[in-house]
Image (cartoon, rainbow, N blue to C red; front, side):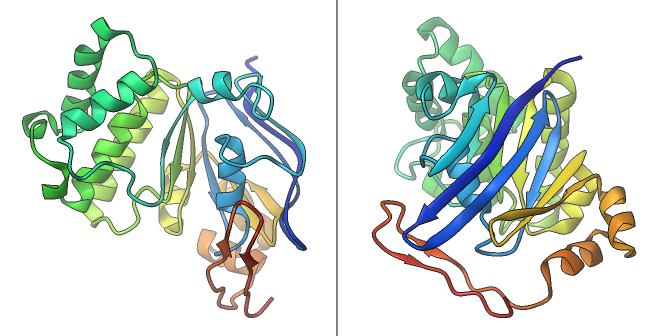
Length: 265
C-alpha cells in the first residue's frame, strides 16, 4: 500500500512570542485531495509556507515525497507546484512568456518546453491567447494560467492556496473539475485551502481543520459532521472554530514584526 507523500511531524513555528503553528502533525496519501481549513490567522498559510520551503520550522519535521523539506530544499521543490493566494503572474509578459520563464526556472528540458506549454495551455483553454499580455486577462484567466504554470514540471503535489478567491461560480466549477481530473488521471496529490466550505465538502476526500495553530479535527466531511453532531460541514466548522470574527494576521516572516489580533478568542 502506498505511503504518505506529505508528512508533517510535530511542527512548531514561532514569531517572537507568537506561536503560529503549535505542534502540528498530519500525513497525506499519494493521490489524495486534501483540504486544509481554518479561520484567518489559524496557521494555514504559515504551514503551507513551511511545506513549500519559504519558511523554516522552529522545530519538527516536514517531508515531501520522502525529502526533508528543511535539509533537501531543491529536491523538495521539484516535487510540487503551487498556486498562491495572491496573483503571481507577470502582467507585462504574455501568457506564453510566463510559462516559458517558469519552464526554464524549473529546468524543463528545452525540447520539451514548447510541447508541454502548449498541452497545458490547451487544457486550461488559453492557447489561443498565448500571445496576449497577462494584464489583459480576467481574474479567472489568470488563475487558469497559474494552475497551468504550476504543472509545467510535472509535480507530484499541487498546493492551491485559496485558488478560487474572487472567481465567479462558473470559473470555480471549471477549475475544480480540472483539479479532480489531475488527481484521477495523473495520480497527483492536491493540497488546498479555501474559505468556501462547499468546495471542501464537494472536492476534498479528507479535511483537516486548524485553529489557533493546532489541528482541531481531521476526517471526511461526513465524519466531521457526525463527530460534531451537526447537519453539514459549515455547522461542523463553526462548532469547532467558534463564531467570533477573526481579524487578518499580519506577519513579517523575518520575525521582526508580528501582529496577531483575534476577536472572540
